[in-house]
Length: 217
Image 1 (cartoon, rainbow, N blue to C red):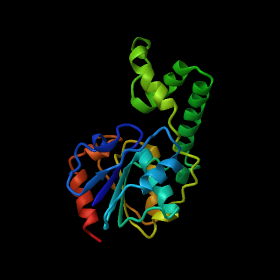
Image 2 (tube, one colour; image 1 turned 90 degrees about the vertical axis):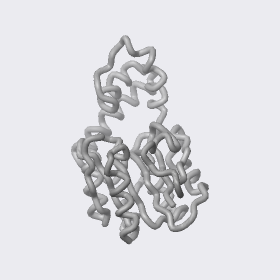
Image 3 (cartoon, rainbow, N blue to C red; image 1 turned 45 degrees about the horizontal axis):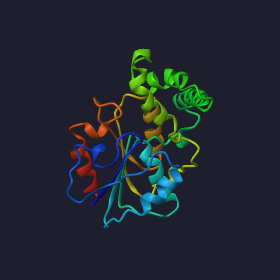
Image 4 (cartoon, one colour; image 1 turned 135 degrees about the horizontal axis):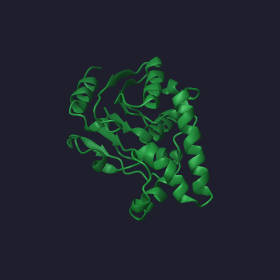
């Protein structure tokens, strides 16, 4: 069976519109809680072995924490554009992103959500901040500002070394490619599926690639 773990956006099955529903469980985590709390919630989801965990973006963090803590056991691990910033510290693209987002979060903490969104809107969602759209985007900006950042979680890439692991990236972002390179150094297989940017799971070859990998053990 497969356990699908969403990122910071859509949750549950909505985050995986192309995934097969048979023998699948879709996590519904509270993304406003700490990653360690999400890892505990993840460990409480009933699964039947053998199990493949498929995690997207920030969802890879609670998965890795749960693996490090021994809370979950998996037979196959598929990490889709994993936001494991901790494992690639020192990489210029990673450090640039952290510096920019840390400044934005300072604005949010000081109550200046507009200044926060002027930075985050183009960096994370594409397109510039547009004042005329602020009323409709304010709720999303506020929600996003409360999310736990994807660094500072003491993630150890060694945890994947004994696990049959596939990392999928879209080939569009230097940060995710740097993370994938570290994971590859620790035994992961890396495949790029270009054309859908961060939502690699929407690529038409996503399911065939995952199916082939999880049946190749």
